[in-house]
Structures are given as structure tokens and as C-alpha cells.
Image 1 (tube, rainbow, N blue to C red):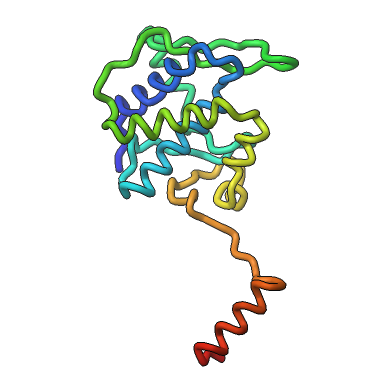
Image 2: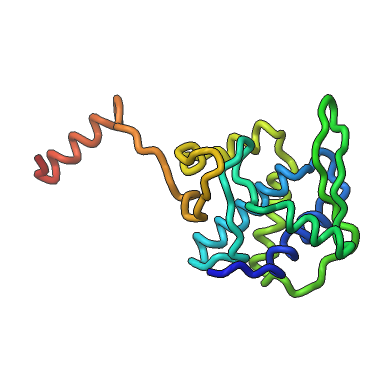
Length: 177
């Protein structure tokens, strides 16, 4: 899918506006909401929402070329980017300045986006990192593009203990070698 610039900018704006009063909701959390929303929509619909690209960053999946989109949205008066002290550190904030245009999302997409905003907003930085630092993220190199389908990557471990005994017993029952 080609990048739909307006969909991407509206997505950023919608999240920034919805979280404008949430303490501690910085760019890293914004990226994670975007990543989870877009990746989950992709797994459900088989189609990318905005066509945006994401890269592996130290703090999890990050929107590629984010500076460009933030600058455009700031120049349009839709968001404000600034540094803010949050406890003992400085975070990069993106605040929506006015409500986004209606009609960006279908009802189910709006529900999904609101779900991810709430989940990510209610997590600590460590909790949200644990959620986004999945196997697909782990096997990528720093700066590599992360396809939305990488959210489906899983580690497979060998069965142990009772699981192994059950598998052997079931294999015998089925006449497998």
C-alpha cells in the first residue's frame, strides 16, 4: 500500500488530541498506540491503515520520518510538540490543539484506536515496552523497517515436563512415529 499522508497525519492528530491532558503521554507512547492500532488492523483486515512505515528503535517500534509529519501538523496548527518534565526526566510531548476532523475512522476502527490509547496510556513505560518489545522487534536490527506482520512473530519453545509427556502420549495414540 502506498502512504496515505492525510490518513497518517489525521491518525497522529487524533491520538495527540485524545491524549492532550494525559500526564506522561509522550512521543514513545504515541508511536506505540500507532503501531498497535495499525498492526492489529492489518491482522484483522489484511490492509494497512495509513501505509506508514515503522522502524525498530530502542524504545520499540517508531514511526519512520516522524519529524516530517510532526512539523507539517505543527505548521497547520493541529498539534504542538514540546519537552515536558515528567517525574525525574524530560519527555517529548505531542499535544493536539483542536479536535480532529470527523470521519477518519470507521466505528470499529475508532473503538480499536480508543482501546489502544487507553491501554498504552494506563501503562508505565516499562510495561508498554514489554508489550511492544515482542519477538518481531527483538530479531530486527536497530533502524530496520518492521513490517506490520512482524507483530505475528512468536518464539516457539520445545515442550517440557507434562506438556512433553502429553505430546508423546498423543503421538502414540495417533500412531505417529
